[in-house]
Length: 209
Length: 209
DNA sequence: GATTTTCTGTACCGTACGGTACGGTTCGGT
DNA sequence: ACCGAACCGTACCGTACGGTACAGAAAATC
Image 1 (cartoon, helix red, strand yellow):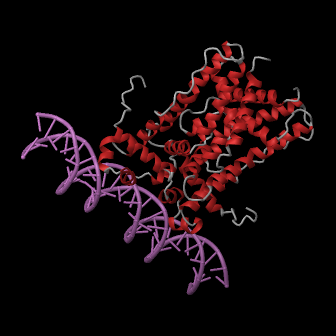
Image 2 (cartoon, helix red, strand yellow):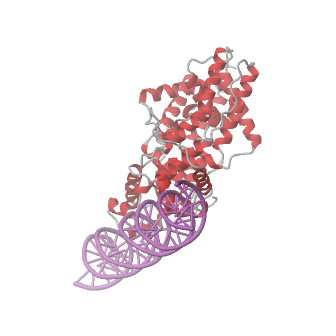
């Protein structure tokens, strides 16, 4: 974990292949993600797949890693922000989080990683976990710290506070969607859920109290 | 969904077979759950498996259904309870919930259902969902309503309140464990997490405010 | 333009698994 | 004692998939 031995950089061609494979995964689950199907869909040969990614597990890892590298940096926490600015930033975080986890791609990747979790130490879960945290967790934790130092929030442990915020936002929606139950509600409900979660979070960690 | 066409009651023998199969699933993931392996472990023939459960999907559904039928009723919400009694009940719920979702069996079943979610409308997810709600959700919602009518809680929608409580208790622990990252922390931490969650919940929904 | 590398397409191999068939055995009913 | 149902163990079949081999095309290098 110290030296980053792998070079997660691929050729343009290889990236295109991985994107095609992800497409297949999204619309057919892991069962549909056979090497033959990928080769056919991506217009390459199976031999090239094995040459580039080693074996099927390596291919899966490459798909996840590739997607994990697509993290968009997102807005920096403004140097000086108002209390309403903080609230707005938190609500945007909540909206982004809900949108992300309810997206087809996210669901497919999480299902894949969870399916592989019991066997084969390729550590897809770890990759997803890390990229997820990197995508939103880290910078939101920073946002919370900022809110603390500015006196808007009152939290002893930003990690803990972030975890609480996550729980208030996501509730049991993620597992519900992973299980295939409900297609995420409308954008209207999503907005409402985000506002409610942030209101509750501020009620818990707001400076007043 | 109206007439319950299936009879989820099995022979003692069949139940024993399903338990053995569940054992295999827990310690090897879905990959290890082949019909041959089940027959060998349970000391029955493949032909009997197919005779009893139809096909492999039916077998999986039977495993999940069987486990779902093992719900233990749990304590009734006492007719008249003190405010501390309510808090204690909520903490017990939180502890139970955390223990359950971090158990090997729960993780294995959830992984199985999530893996099947993208294909084959056997609806394992729906079964798990329903049994999970039945196990704790429903009666805890009743508990919350009781708390409302007794004036200890102040909530407009018990369902909403339950959902919030769930989020505060579980946070991102469930997805983390499903992804294979962390073995759930010690019983000490679990107790602490439960207390924290309930404290926060009461802070949000307590009558004072 | 010749040579070497990289790629595609297809064919192939071994294996593992879902599902079925069948002979032999146990066991309850009469 | 006989019969039939249920069942075990094993063998078997078809197929699907991971992985490899190979022949020819494309592209790159000189």
